[in-house]
Picture 1 (cartoon, rainbow, N blue to C red):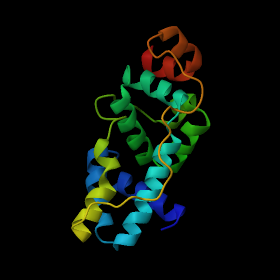
Picture 2 (cartoon, helix red, strand yellow):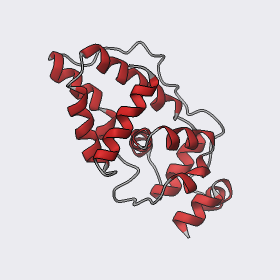
Picture 3 (spheres, one colour):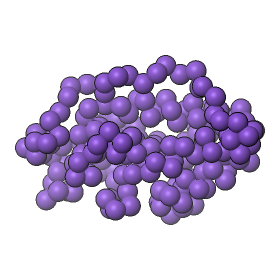
Picture 4 (tube, helix red, strand yellow):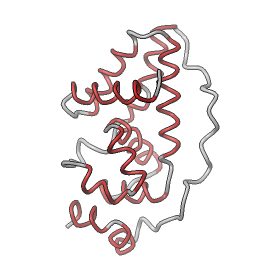
Amino acid sequence: MDETEFWELVDSTREAAAGDPEDQSDLLVERLVRMDPDAVLDFARHFEARFNRAYRWDLWGAASVLLYGASDDAFDNFRYWLIGQGREVFEGALHEPDDLADLLEDFDEERDGDCEDLGFAADEAYERLTGLPLPDLGLPPRADEPAGTPLDFENEDVLADRFPRLWEQFRS
């Protein structure tokens, strides 16, 4: 599975789920179990590599604005959800997290920004196919600290200054 196929699978499941992250997770598992185990491993590598790329302070700050705060676990679930939004939103957010104000048509903190199940779709599919847990993917381990400059997530002035469009759209 190449990068284009990875994003096509993400996009097609999101569209079929009408944007519902939990339904997207279920659909993704259903589609992955129709593939061979090696394709599921490829999908898992693509997913995990993007998950690790998104481990950044600035993106965590954007998640804090959108979610009214984001713990370690909430930020993990936000990154799973962000990948599920597709290549344009994901890459746009990595380019400039404040661009999420333009990239997200709407954002409902009750439904959006949190999808732990999406992060484990490949694990579930692989186990269904093989009866075994997903093996080590051979990727470098995640960094101990997020990339970039730390932000004070408790300081609303800092967040409003760093993410003015997100703050205006989702907090005002």
